[in-house]
Length: 339
Image (cartoon, rainbow, N blue to C red; front, side, top):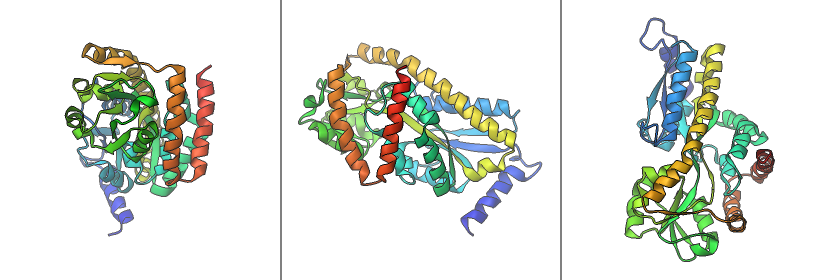
């Protein structure tokens, strides 16, 4: 049976049959991380989104949450949101399968502030183009870019205040783009799954890594790392995706409720995440870590080395026009954010 035919059958069962248990339009929503609102901002977002949708639709649309990647890994869930009536929150690791152009929004040191990142992801020309291209290519609607943990910071068993401090060190990388950045600083980068990061740091397989404070706490990395460098490397985000045919099958009022609820939940999540950054840094300090904020000169040095290495890696994967547009829009967002 062709996928489109199968999908139509699924939709008819889930959304059309009167009197069935599924007639209330129950929609599955999958994402990474535990169902813990304090430690997992994506779950905080999902819980808010669920409540807002169900309230706005008077219970006509029910959102059923599947945390902890219960419906599959990143690749499997991307396939699901393309071919079946679900909602998925994907990381860059998931998007790279179908839309690597989004990596242009993850250039190191691209955003100067949270406000700048919000401006970019909520209303830039890049995001308008990305939404249209993704829908045309995959059938997926990108609704929101969800703030999941603030900006990324470096941790290490040695002080790393500027790029010169990285020389000779080994850093855990999430992907090849981070490997390129570490190498530009004079360190080596090794991709290591998140589930193995703690042991890698404890045994010296890696000297350091980077993540927002919330993930450093979630992974108990403060137990095996001494130093925290608040370099604001990259904005930490994930992407709220919904199957396009599913969204189109809803009534106009229900579609509006989905979209408006997604944005309201995202705004609430941003406020939640950003309100806890200082508290989380203090927690890490109280558990033995020494925190350091780079000077303006040190930050400029990080950007001077880190951004070009990432861009060089990205140029092999996407058209230059995407990179140019992201950087142009980010400059505008940074200028607006500074006002």
